[in-house]
Length: 549
Image (cartoon, rainbow, N blue to C red; front, top):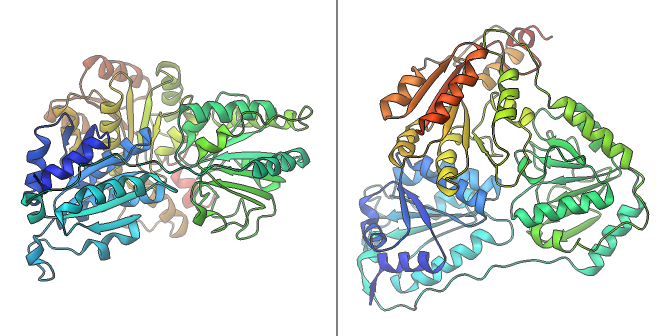
């Protein structure tokens, strides 16, 4: 005989859960009590959105479902930002929500929400458990749904009274992973298309990758001398200094790479959906009928043909597909080897930071210094904003599991993600980049980093504005500034007030010493970089955008 709360925790243990993030609530006290008797780490967060983003980051870097627990009503709706990120980014995650007791439902009870109506758009599956005996069934299914096909978030609502009720239920067992494998005929078709091609390119994206599959696609690209691009914010899928790397396909794409994709005669989309951002607003591939011969490999059959009609559609996860390529080699040396070299050279030129810019702080030399002084396995996290361009364009990712950034463009993600990444990989350096607007979306999670003694380094690029919105505003409505100016705290003092380490950088040459002091402090740190708002992009100033130059 077990309580519903104990059955929830039993199912988590059976499925190998090591850590959950949460904001506690009276609606699921019985679960919190059951967690007391396990080895599962419970990370107490300061806002449910941050807790959900931590769970997303766990799923993003491990492939295991990140687990988040929140209370009903406001707690659940706060967590919806993290749900949306996990949904658009195809990240496995399970959100458990405390719910009103069964007898109070449909009365608009205290903090009551009907979650199936509220969250169906941002989750793969939403359910409410009515019978505590079925808890093992529902939780096992949640793990299967979150990880199978196109991964994504699952929501389970837990009425408060089922968690305290004592019942006899079957012992929870781990879920069975579901994989889809390509057939020999499909691999033979791929070989034929490659042998026929003159200007092929591979674009990597999506999830369900691991270190072995990254190594496998690298070996495949070498055998076929293929140029490889990574989709928006999936840059950790290929070594940027590898001679086959052609750059990332995303916001502000290198024009040379965009031209190569448009003029390719064969495009292999591997793992991702190639949605609006990586496709430059669906302009690199025509929808629904691309000019290029398209091979699309994706683990969910419903995504194949949804936006683009492929010549060859293969329903398979990235890892299983790559494994099937192990013996696929060209019959003769590929004809496009020199083109691949030229594309890599174009990437290296594009990813070399500018030396100068407006104001006393130049981000180009700062990025150059970081490239020379940060280890290859360092994890970079960020949210959304123009500041992120400095990371995505100029940081050269070398290894798998070194990037956590939302493809959905959600602000505030970087700091909660850094907390989760440092807990997952305590021996690795974790660097969060955030804008001043982005940081304060979830800046309170700096307290979580301090509580758990996580020495992350957060670089807050402070230009006093919502930079991306101001850039668009000045382009569309030049000189008519509205709702984009910000008043900010002293970010270094903010860090110190929590018990962390704080630095302020007002000139470029101050950054290196500030970073080294932050690293040496052994504390969670914030380095505030005071950037001139004119330095809105690496290539253009705000004035140039305003003037149409």
